[in-house]
Amino acid sequence: MADLRYPIGGFDFPGALTAAARATAIAEIAGTPDRLQNAVRGLTADQLDTSYRPEGWTVRQVVHHLPDSHLNSYCRFKLTLAEHRPVIRTYDEAQWARLPDVSDAIEPSLDLLDALHRRWVYLLERISDEQWSRQLEHPELGAMRLDELLALYAWHGRHHVAHITELRKREGW
Image (tube, helix red, strand yellow):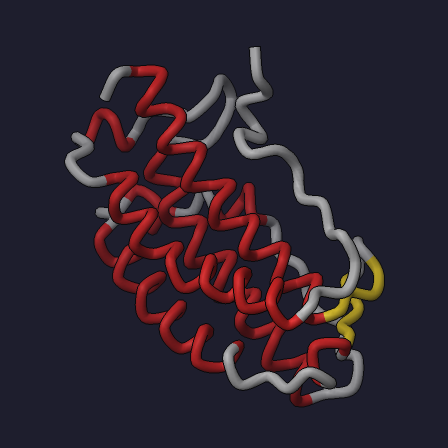
C-alpha cells in the first residue's frame, strides 16, 4: 500500500531552479486554487469531515490549511525580498488545524486561497533572476533560497490536493 501521507512523494529540491523550472513552479502555484476547488466540488459535509488517512486531517482541515500555510509563505517571500536574510517564524500547523475557524465552511478559505495566489503569482512573476538566490533563515531547516521555497510550495499545493483526490478515488466519491 502506498504511503497515504505522501500521495505524490516527498519534497525533493534538485538545486537552483532554471528560469524555465521557476516558470513551471509559478504556473503550478497559480493553478492550485482551481485544482483545490475541483477536488472538493460536490463533497457533502460528512465527506468534508472525513480524514484523508487514518489519524490524518479531514478534507475540511486540509482546505483551511492551504491558505494558512500559503499566507505564511507569501509573507516569507516578501520578508526575504525586503530584508537581508530574515529569520522567519515557524508556526504549529497541527495546532492551527484544531482552531475553531477550521470547523467553518470551506468557501471563505477557497476564496482566500484564490485571492492570495493571484497576488502571490503577480509578485513571483516579477522577481528578478538575481533575487531568486536571496535567502531566509528557517529555524528548523536552515538557510533556504527563494527558488527552493518556490519549489516547496508548488509541491505543497499538489501534495494536499492529492490527499483529497486520492481519498475520493479510494472512496468512490
